Length: 155
Image 1: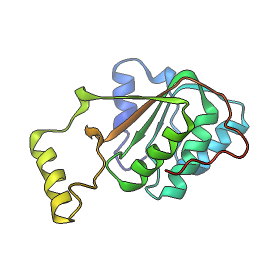
Image 2: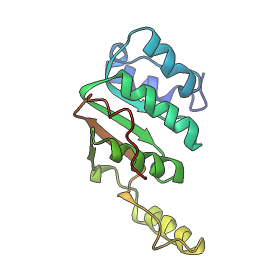
Image 3: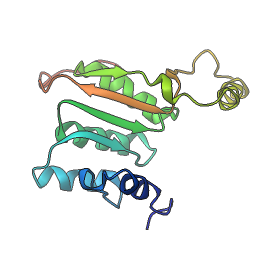
Image 4: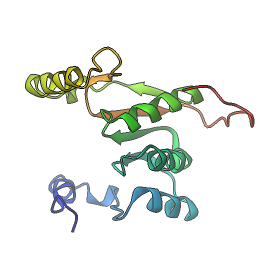
């Protein structure tokens, strides 16, 4: 079983939702391509994968291919630099709408810890907080329009 003892699966079962989800155990950057190759598509993709930018980018690339128009793409760990950078890249594509999650904001104590950490690292003004102090990036896909073959926008 996974590092959290199957807590998510237990919660799904508790609410009778287990038949609407499938758990893929393994790195998301290797599991998502398998789903794509199998011809799958989804209304919701939740990614909580590796924290390096290159692997998050692979996660996004395949999640984007798997996600239906109107579906939601959710990344955990928005407070990490790689996820913030990925979000800046996604914004250049102009195919996703950011969805704020004010109901999922951390406690005041945790917000203070995040802000104090930014000051200690001398980053308070450069730190990018796209969702306040929320740690989820929730995006809704509104277009499947491919970018021009030569598109590059600095991010």
